[in-house]
Length: 267
Image (cartoon, rainbow, N blue to C red; front, side, top):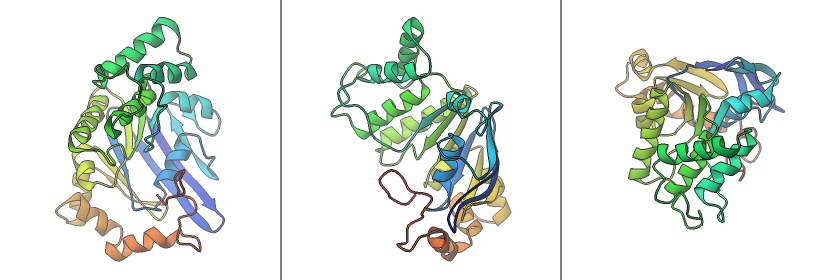
């Protein structure tokens, strides 16, 4: 279970995250939705212990990220939206390498690597070097690295972005499988139809604050809209509200200072 409690992170005058609260229970899929620059990535980085919050904290399976970030990272499996893999390593070698970071070794490590290969349907290419892999295959490697230590809590940052139809379907099936096995799953997406299909609960973040939290059905009913996409736009203050949100936390160049990915692209 992931508990986010009053998280705050400012960058100078930019309030990237400004008092965020929500919970992600075990056995459920929780979606974190918001426009670019809303604070999603900064929130995820604080949950993972990569950024220290100015105020508030995150509790993961009883571990406080401020007091014991290493324990929190051990309790989490994190799939980023990066497509980077080591081209000279096979998927099995990736899982063995990353499993070692979590203290796995010997037969236990080999068994976990094989379990991930079976879980993700990677048998046909588990022992091929990843150079030349499709984006969908690389995403499976990245997800497998996050799952090799069998974490109870899984974070997925835009897991279907850029994938073809079949890879999207496979990724969604994995998310459902993790939920059905009792894992806590937190993921971000820009696809409202995907969130409506997968999420038990949704947290909508606008300008660094949670604008709404509940099941897709509850948010649709609350706004009187016909779809989660329409509810999302309404809760953001309409199309103009979304535009304001994208630039509200911007620096002089129009970039959200506290919410960029590694390439500097606003998130």
